[in-house]
Amino acid sequence: MHKTVALAGNPNVGKSTLFNALTGMNQHTGNWPGKTVSCAQGICRHGEDTYTLVDLPGCYSLMAHSEEEEIARDFICAGHPDAVIAVCDATCLERNLNLVLQILSTEVPVILCVNLLDEAKKKKISVNLKLLSQELKIPVIGICARQRSGLNQIFPAVQQALDTHRNASPDQYSAKFLQDTQTAAFIHRCEAICRKAVRFENPHYDRFDRRLDHIFTSRKTGFSILFLLLLFLFWITISGASLPSSLLYDGLFWVLEQLEKLAINLQIPEILYAPVLSGILRVLAWVVSVMLPPMAIFFPLFTLLEDFGYLPRIAFCLDRCFQKCHACGKQALTVCMGLGCNAVGVTGCRIIDSPRERMIAVLTNSLTPCNGRFPVILTVSSLFFFTGNTGISASLGAAFVLTLVILFSISMTLLASWILSKTLLRGLPSSFTLELPPYRRPQFFKVFLRSVLDRTVFVLGRAVLIAAPAGLLIWILANIQLGDTTILRHCVSFLDPFARLLGLDGVILMSFLLGMPANEIVIPIMLMTYLAQGSILQVEDLAFIGQLLADNGWTWITAVCVLLFSLMHWPCGTTILTIHRETGSLKWTLAAILLPTLMGMTACFLFSSCAQLFSFFLSP
Image (tube, rainbow, N blue to C red; front, side, top):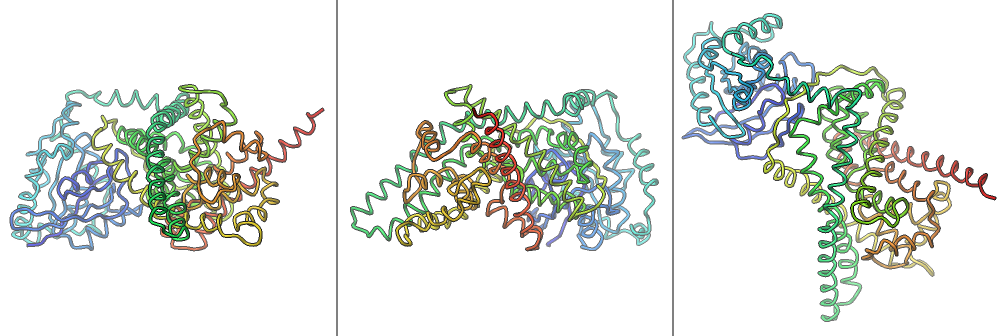
């Protein structure tokens, strides 16, 4: 027989972990609320029965106050599941039982899975499962989803609940949820049940977590710790990615050289192989060698912080700032996601309940520099602000500049959010429930596997798909001539007067335009254009790059303007497609493109004008 079973529970109780364990799927999990914002389905079999498991978004109540609660309520009350597996956290059972009692008020068979018994044992919290079953009159089983302990009891318990429901008299299941909305009665019932079934041997079991919270969320130390953690993350990423990126770079370009020699030996016309080898594959080789090593380091480190439980603490620290901008504190979480990939950050905006505040988060997420913009920031800062530094001092200096840029981007995000809340998206900030999850020891192997499969490979794959046609376009512009020069040079000459007003030049602005599919290729396009070459070059000598830029008129003012513009300009192609998919509106997609672009152009113009004026008065 085929049955549909829903997994329901509060956020961060391990529903998605249980779903993955039962179905063998890879639904993304994390130690913070709001990870599941849509229903995931998977198939599992037990004996002769087949079950469709539906992982519902985490919710605190069926009395819907958010999109997640609406999805969960509608599926349980109107989706006609055969049964509901309610998942609770053994360390905070009293709070979780409120939802369980509400589900019991519907006419759906329910079983209760008390998860995280291993954490409860460490905190010396014991749960009397038999007494809990007697009080609730439903099957209750204890599990540890991460260790796959107790999972073999789930489907027999589901069948028991179905049999009990089938044989029950109508009076036992006559209560309708919509007629029973006495929240206070549910809460008092939870308290009464937990007084009987839960025993705390150590009433101060959460003292260590509260001490950490006092450090991580304090007004005095919260922002300092955030700065130091970002500095550490970027330093490790920059230092660790340097060697593998160089090896990958050399290896891929060596393969391209061999393919080019093979094409010449086979006497294939250049017009046939050059667009592919010098255009598409050369750009892809650059994107992969530049993107893959940093992402393979940054994403696991970032996921470790997520698994540890630090991300909600960032939202707590920044909540006051976003509230003053009439935005939602959950936007801080989407900013963190945007550090890896803006497209991921835009998708993560689903966790924000208010449509107005969700739109603000979507429109401003591109102000967060993603992994793809790091090469521009690091190259320019190394050439103009840390010249001559090597080894640890160079990587630490570059990480310091990158951290300052990130903090500046947060300031710009707050400013843009405030402007939007006063103009296009007027409104007051909404309140939201921010649950600070317990600190947990990260699962290093699962973190590495999840960050590589769910993030690194996924983001790299999308970047490659969009960068491939961009490589062909770059080759066409750089090799096809109109008159006595190439199309690329004509475009550069056309953009140059406007770019000069921004403290840039036509080459820089054109490089950012052509780098829209993948920001990683902005610097190589600049070098290719300055050197009047027909394809992206393999240049590793920073001294040569610095001299080339200086010969083409770069100054420290140009460098700062490039940093500002790399921080604030149009989103990449992947992010634009994601914004359109999330908003379903061409108007808001255009707004998401124009907002950071206008902010970047304004910042560059003001800085360039002020710096040149200041230099004029200081000159003899």
